[in-house]
Amino acid sequence: EAERSVLIAVSPNARTIEVRSGRAVANRVTDRIAQLGVTAAVASFGEGDLIDGLVSALRVMSAAIASP
Image 1 (cartoon, rainbow, N blue to C red):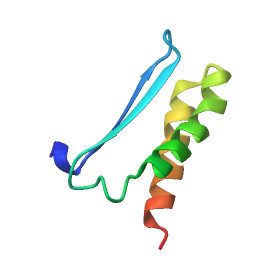
Image 2 (image 1 turned 90 degrees about the vertical axis):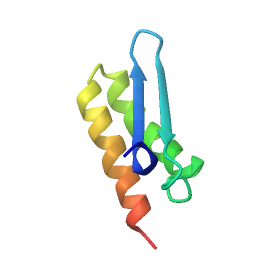
Image 3 (image 1 turned 30 degrees about the vertical axis):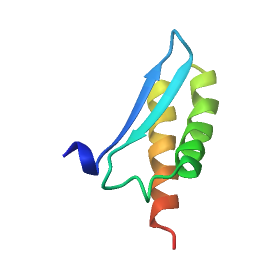
Image 4 (image 1 turned 180 degrees about the vertical axis):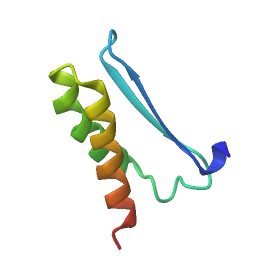
């Protein structure tokens, strides 16, 4: 199912976030959508709350994808 998936990888020690999308969803999960997710996550990550950051990223990205 990797072709229809989105991966959000976080390395707290390296302070990096990476978003990868499969081929089947790449036209919907654009660089702009990925950046929205990263931006939403960074605030929580800065406070040391990784789970809330990931949840925020998922919510923002899914809302942006669902919008016409």
